[in-house]
Length: 256
Image (cartoon, rainbow, N blue to C red; front, top):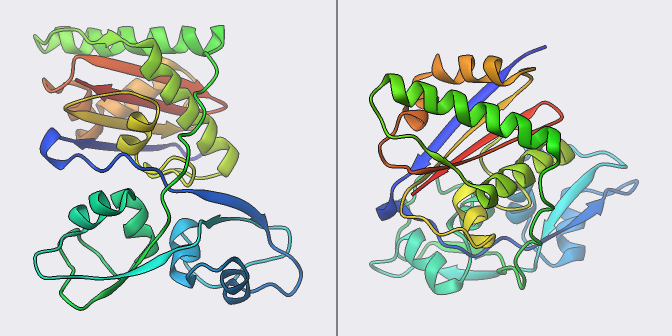
C-alpha cells in the first residue's frame, strides 16, 4: 500500500475568508458532457472543472460530480486582489481560485480581467457527530506522541481539543467518502475555511494529513520524518491540536 502525507499551515495575516462553497452532487448521465452539465445547471464550465479538480474533460456515466451554485462574473478593478474580492463577495478565497484555474497566484489578477464568482453557501455544514471510542483512542495516542516529541524539543505541550478533533474527523470521513487526498475539500473548502464554518476561531492554524498508515506510531514516524509535517508538530505558533483517524485517513489540525 502506498502511504501518503501532506502538511499545510497559515498565519493570522494570511487568513482566508470564512464563507463556504455551495455545491450539490450530480450523477453523470449517458451522453452528458461537462459543457452540457454546466449549461443545464447555469454555472460556468470553469466552475465545474475547478470544483471537481478535473485534469481533463473526460467524464463517464455514473460518475459523481459536485456542481457549484450558479455563478456571476466580476470585472477586476484597479487595486483589487482575490482576497478583497472574496471578502466583498462573501465567497471563500479557495472557491474563487477553484472557479478560476487560470489564476495561479493570489495577486495574479489585473484590471479588466473577468472572474467567475461562485455563489456563497447559504448555510454552514452540519457539525460532525462526536468521535467514536476507537477514533478517540487513536486521537489520544497521536496527541501523546506529539507531546512527547515537543517535550524532547523543549516545547510546551498541545492541548487535545475535542471540538477540533471532531472537525478533523469530518475531514477524514470526507476524504474517504469523496475519494481524495488533499488539503482542499470539495465539501468544506480549505482547512481554514472548514474550521471557521464549524465555529473554530484561531489566530494561527495548520493541518497534517496522511493515508494508509496502520497505527499512531506509524503515522507519527512518517510525519516526523517529513520537514513540513515536523514543522507543524513542533511549531511554537499553536497551543491546541485535534486528531482523527477514519478508515485509513489521518488528520491533525493545529490552532492557537
